[in-house]
Amino acid sequence: MLSAEALSALALSLKVAVLAMVIALPLALFAGYALARWRFPGKGLVTVLVYLPLVLPPVVTGYLLLIVFGPNGAIGRWLEQGLGLVLAFRWTGAALAAGVMAFPLLVRPIALAFAAVDKRLEDAAGTLGAKPATVFFTLTLPLAAPGIFAGVALGFAKALGEFGATITFAANIPGETRTLALAVHTALQRPDGDMLALGLSLIALSVGALAVGLSEFAAARIRGDRHA
Image (cartoon, rainbow, N blue to C red; front, side):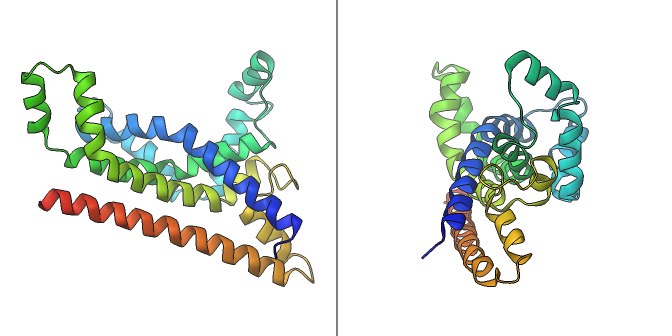
């Protein structure tokens, strides 16, 4: 039986991960399509920026978010004064940090999925009178759906387990920003927290394994469609 603290951390982690995907997925779709299909000046630099969170220490990413979106950051100050929206040290800030860290894992499978779509099918639909938007939403997007699903599964798992950027940008506030990963860290600081840490770790392990399994299933679908 999970304690109230564990349930709170799990519920907050799920809320943070869902919001992170809502924030990141539209941008990841655009970035994945652009990297797969478009040629433009500075594409190499954009690629580096997209995948940079994968190689940067998460604490550095969190610190950069604090500089930009914190109370004294240019965007953070504007959001607070103009919209009354505070991100730093709030659960919404934890979602932003998780979304940024998950973004590369979203973009990579999505870009590969868009690249795998046979452009001849799109051209054929165009010659039959379909508008570009219609081709994208009725042909390209459905064909790329397994890759998009794979990206969402990996991104969700990453957002659910994000630690370094979250604790730097949103801190470790009980009931506000203490997600599953932070709850495990906090439990390990207590003399009697081993069992709680173990239970939380098993939950994180189960969710992560499920997400990776779903991602692999989607990847297998992509490979199957490609060789069909």
